[in-house]
Image 1 (cartoon, rainbow, N blue to C red):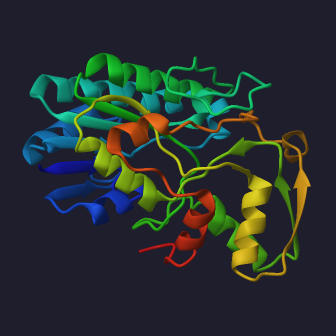
Image 2: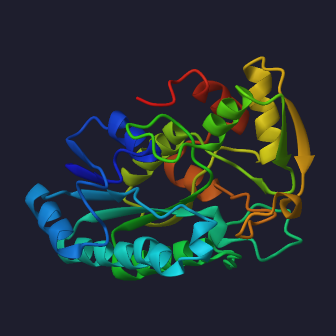
Image 3: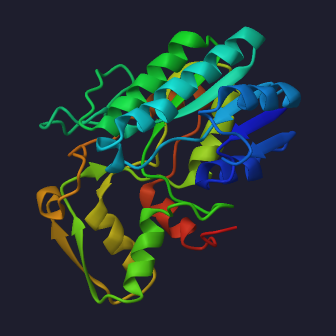
Length: 285
């Protein structure tokens, strides 16, 4: 089935394109501006996809606090238009959301299931929640996949990822202060791409969680990266309050991926395995 990937030059789009054995067209932001509907849909009409995958998003979590209209335009309104377009043509639509739709339950310590009530604590999280609801309401043949903190090779350098940032900082700094009170599961794009590919083949549409298994804090992830790379960088744990980001992050946003495993009969690899394998990949391809 012919597939078109929006945001195809980013980390996830790159992984999905490389995995596909069928015809696939990866469109960059320059190729397809999600906020400019007329040329976007003219382009899509000319390509006649049977599957449309949306990897494009506004991911500037802190900046979204200052420009929520931009975040909602890309994360909520554009996916709604895409879902409606797919519904009218019988096209399968795949859209990616975020663990940041959760976070309001400050005492949570059990992974979130798909049927748990979302409670975002940032404008970014609100925009992603609006987007996934719009997609599920507009397109019967849709997959909405929540994931977390992606890292992996990409055709476009973009804004990088946490692991790449840590390695870059370690080149010039002997010590780093890293947040240790946000528990989540950052995910290797190659693992997410494979899981998504397997899920799409089932045609069991709906909302899914897909991350690597287990959980960590950003402090624990940084320590593991430096251990695997045999780097002497010293990492100090700090609180989110000490870090002082503009947007609030969930203290706990681990996702339960059992629905994905039951549907595909495949379990996601551990986060430790994912980090180790990712470090063997060039960070840009």
